[in-house]
Length: 383
Image 1 (tube, one colour):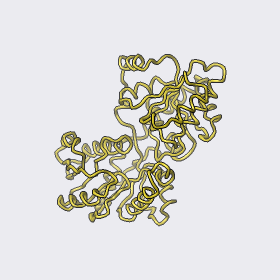
Image 2 (cartoon, helix red, strand yellow):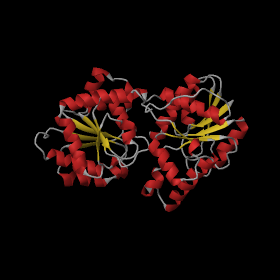
Image 3 (tube, helix red, strand yellow):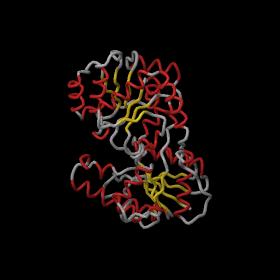
Image 4 (cartoon, rainbow, N blue to C red):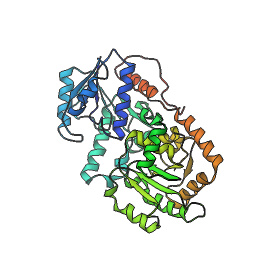
């Protein structure tokens, strides 16, 4: 059998994390099937080293371009592929071989303001619907995303929608050690307690309300020393965050960092007094799970997939009300017993998610799409 996987987003953050972990675990799991990995030219050497049966195939077409609808189907025919896995919602229109698709969330449909134009929203809506109609199986990463897909596409066959959750990258799970931790503390001038946020900076991440909530926290007795560290790319694109900091009167206590390497992030997770993630919408919400795996207490949103991911191992707050976010932060910072309990519960919860099990479930999905019977696999740590 010959299975093709679109790995052109190998270096991306969200979908890239998914692709990297699924492919690497498939390389351990399946030594018989030939896998063709469509990739960027810069990733060819890396992918060639995975396993003998994993073959990189360079494709220079840009994501969300017209070209990919022609170039990938042409390569599929030339390679004689039996199945294509598209790890996001764009399934090339000229693809004629059986296909499976992963739809992580419906964020483009729920937050059209992130797209450059009305036409981009129409493209996303059309391509997602086309992928759902034409795929032999649709993977998604949470029950919340599954519900969203069925809400926007009520004609989708629920039997073909399979939840296979994300898990944690090994680079985060590995303790960076005392020397690296001290280096990070010195590099980022970390002294005393801090609240940590890590993720992207888009408006649905709700950082303006987080900053307001942090300002409310700082007004209360006993929190003069606490800082807020915000890690996320493209901070400079959102001047509203700087204005929110000024308005909240916490300019000296909020620090913005751009991208940090995985080992640095692993150290920052472990150094934080509390990790906060008040997002309004997540297909899965990996950062809270990463923080829990590091033993850090978590305060997160009560909306979307987040309660499903964190279970009973985090403090849930109403993300639309800064007062409630501040209450959650104060509950954790003021209660050593609660912090210890959340740390233990969080580590246990994070261990319920596994890329190995998720890759097994995806592999079983491939076989199902190809009409090959395989034993059932329980992929979800939540069941």
